[in-house]
Figure 1 (cartoon, rainbow, N blue to C red):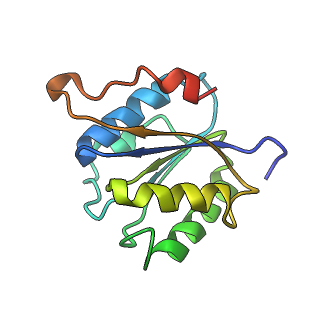
Figure 2 (figure 1 turned 180 degrees about the vertical axis):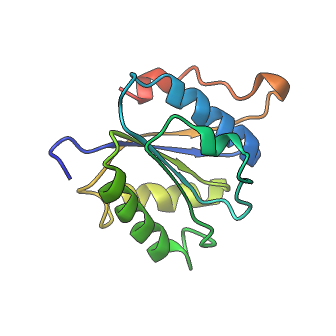
Length: 144
């Protein structure tokens, strides 16, 4: 990993499609040509035609390991390390399906074995706003 570690942003809340839409909007706000990666952790992985697979990113990794706090903690860490090594992203979006997993995911990124590989930029909660999708008013500050 280079001296400039990727910024990680955790997205949780609402439904899976709302979280993916928020990630899509965040990805669109990142400077062109910058390497992005997305890690999906929801048990209900999107179908092949989902927008997640068309995101403008270097890599999309889907893992259905169960709870990333308990039984899936090691699998999540291993998957993140592989994702970081293979795609070497500048930005990393981590999708979490449940607010109950946020504290453990944050601890894993800032104090766990991954602390030397990524910098946590923030945590965003996706909300469902109908067809308009989730709001991202705080995103530009978090991504810098």
